[in-house]
Length: 341
Image 1: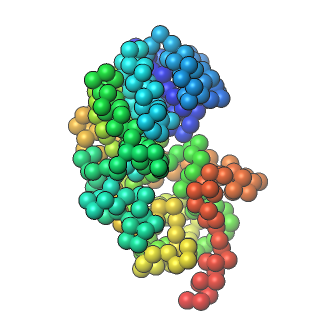
Image 2 (image 1 turned 180 degrees about the vertical axis):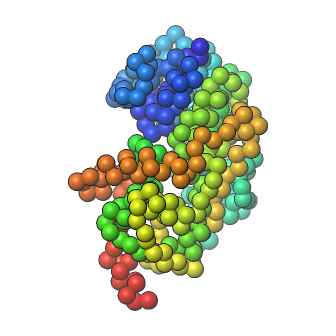
């Protein structure tokens, strides 16, 4: 039996990972700041309250040791060094990284996208061999690159599987991109404007597929970097239509040939060039097969968002989403644009 310690166990990926590991027969210690227990977990899941920023608390959570430590909440060099310091008691690690570490062959990346012609032109699909941003502490992307660098350098002491996740979706997400279309449908908006002809593609990653990768990597120690995305990368127009189908509504698409106009036509998936990742390495190295497709995972996601929104302002329900994207629902600006066409 594999003993797994899961850090960030009550987050969106953590809940799915604990579920996948326990169903596979692993003994699981679920670590989170609140020390909460998901009602779906088996009773034999050990729950520990600890803040991973506290070195002593993290060490105590690991206890005498574990076969694999699964980390959802490592963001930079400091967390990497924390993990490496546990090498004597941890057999291997599985750590969540991000596709945002990639940069194109001209040095453009997610941190340059606000600059003129700053959005990266990635190959389609992106393999794990694609160059990455310079490690640092100036942004989420450079922090993840620093995390990767430190862990890969210590691979002889602590074998690590790094999973570069795409646009994560599923229940318990604090920044669900699906909110954009779910709320519009709830508000009775039956027309939507989509920039770039509705053809933007930003590869989604179901928490269930990421959990499956974690399940497969846990008993197979090794130092590797793998993309972690769904089997399909739908366009933003296809995503919108799929959410409509789940909610039983019909919406007219108004397609812009170019970028958003003063924010009109923008969505959390809207990008001027595709971000699509290759999953061949995961298949070859872990025997990975996806457990769910994007559209099939939507009913659970939509239901969770609807329940969270019920009777609440969306900014109260999803404050992190508001902070990241600003006002996603400026209907007045959209209507003014439509009248002026």
